[in-house]
Amino acid sequence: MRKLYDLYFVSSNSHKYKEAKSILDSFGIKLGFFKSNLEEIQSNSLKEIAEKKAKDAFSKCKKPIIIEDDGLFIDSLKGFPGPYSSYVFKTIGNKGILKLVPSKRKAKFVSIITYCDKKILESFDAKLDGTISKSQKGKGWGYDPIFIPKNSRKTFAEIDHKNELSHRFKALKKFSSWYLHKLESNGR
Image (cartoon, rainbow, N blue to C red; front, side, top):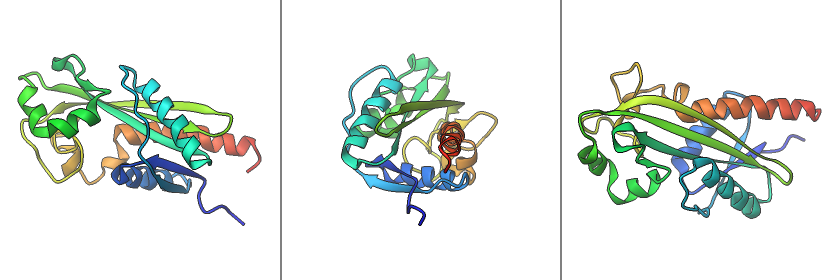
């Protein structure tokens, strides 16, 4: 009998889970959701934050898991908010970011997917270049209404096919390739 899920996405953010599930479904990976608030250390390194969260997630779930950590890095603000994106969003939101950004609006989103089981801790990162819009556009969550991916005129919140080009998609694609190879190597 096949397992219900291949692994679990651990997060308190159901939006991230829904995106990850949709993306991993396309690769044939069944993803469950384990809702939990995870320990989030303060660090300038997304990878360090992600790996600590993954270890915490595995200790709570006791099954193979992935977590996702990401950051919005704005060039003219010297990479701010970067690894502090979640906190900055909760405190000043998109309106606050728009007030801070000067005329140079170049930015990038970085995503790190970290897998953890009893023996393995592995991270996969990806970035997506873009710009910060001059106003909020579209109905989306997080920074989606203000981030315009490169070669687009629309924000993530206005794009129907976000899951086919996002930083999260790119990181999950790398993870999927590794994970499916791992399963194949183990005869599954």
